[in-house]
Image 1 (cartoon, rainbow, N blue to C red):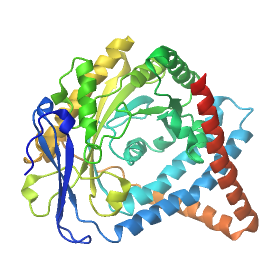
Image 2: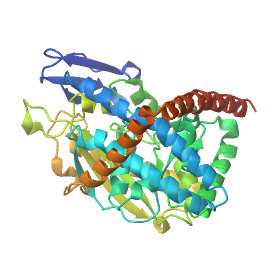
Image 3: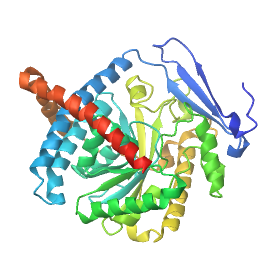
Image 4: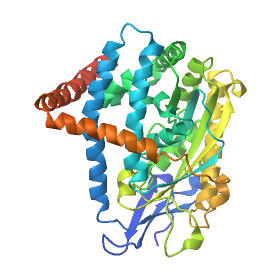
Length: 427
């Protein structure tokens, strides 16, 4: 009932919730954008919260975080033992450990909540690649795990391009470094060229080491959630206008920051075979209007999935051979912007038009197929990690080591990383 805003500065999120907290009535959230976005009003729909959902999310976090210190100790031990080895050889046990941990987490992200996953487009191959995707959830990394798992144990080769502030993340900050992830800084204009050169150098070294790699890049930089952060539409429109692009081409996604992607391709061009362009569509269906087809959930987080607000995920993959990509930094950035325009059109068609209140099209992404069954490997890995946790907690020595890893590796590691980051930014 609110009037359409007169400018992008008036972007607002409006939430209308019906029923009690445990009901299954729909929750309708409208994100309203001004004329620069075509005056669109996108309906973003979620289901009423399941009371047990928050307990499910707490259980998942307990399992993941409970095993994290053990994973960190094992990863560090492997790094020390393999110091005399080449980078390629040293990464083999690290990748196997990482794969088993990712398979363990599939229990909480896919099997336990009953998430229905549908794959569209091309099938991933057993090859090295640069992986780009839209970024809207704290579950987006899990999509890379699902796709890499299609080629058998491939999730061990996943390396992520991460913000340098994540080095301060307890335990995982330095564990990601051991696994070959690449940290980047959101540098100012004055030192952007130096940062880009350093990033190309790091990715080139990753390729020269001969380490298997799916380098996962989220060019939007931050999660795009116009429900919680309606100003993102305005920010995206400004970025598009700066590049001479039409803001109406970026209503379902955020205008991409192309520098990190360009540096990744330049650094790994001699190593990777292709670029995988992945489009994720978290999906909810209104029980009172099944004829409307798929809609975007109000929240696309792990907590929302566990709380019963959505149980469906569609993933579209498009493969571009690396020899078909442009050669220069500027041309690569323009190519990426073009790919994100395609993503936007794909999501508009899937969710039912720019307004989002039309009829969603399940066939917009092409024929769908289920992912490769993973119950057996997930169960085996879950048994392995749970056995490790139980044996650790039952042993006095194990409890002391666990506590030590939390204090030294967690708090201590975060403190050292914060100090190092502050010094780097100062100088």
